[in-house]
Figure 1 (tube, rainbow, N blue to C red):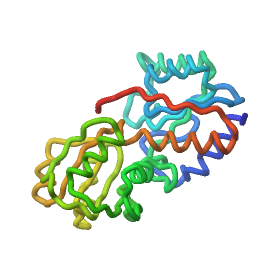
Figure 2: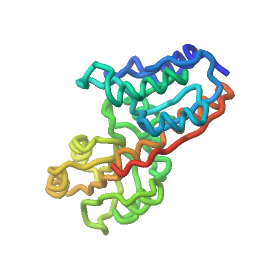
Figure 3: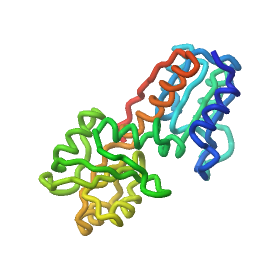
Length: 246
């Protein structure tokens, strides 16, 4: 068991939250019970995930995509009201970590995806959220490895036989970050989504591009974080996946 404020302080320090200028507040977003013994992890704080956390009698819900995003309406109405009311009525704490959970060198989304793909020498590219590493396989094998890991068919842009050695990636909706991969002459860039202009950009710069799913590529950071917390503070832990094809 751990106090919710103590857990928030630990997570904020562990994930180095103060370093990031983010699109949402990181940390304890909705305050619930002060005593935490059971934590649930999920990707996004939608109603289905909240309802399952209620059914599992969670004390805290940890997500990558929480509430209170920049440029969204500030009023608590509609589905935002429903979600927040469900958490408050059931005294569940909501912890959300966005960019800090992408970037963390141990439990972050990027390093966790790299470990599953067996990428060699994974490391961040300077101050960007893009990572780079080495792999020795044709593009088709990289795509198959992603399919095996995520359980979904990725969108592939490029010659299936193209040899991939320098590989770059950034989980989630990071299609615009392909420019960082192009700058270092990478063979392939992996992210979660794709925009209309990206296939042409990839083709004209002779770089393979894989869109592997925003949700699918960002399952692993929140799992690793909560596994760490469960071990650190002797907490019950469960991951719940609310499938999302995007």
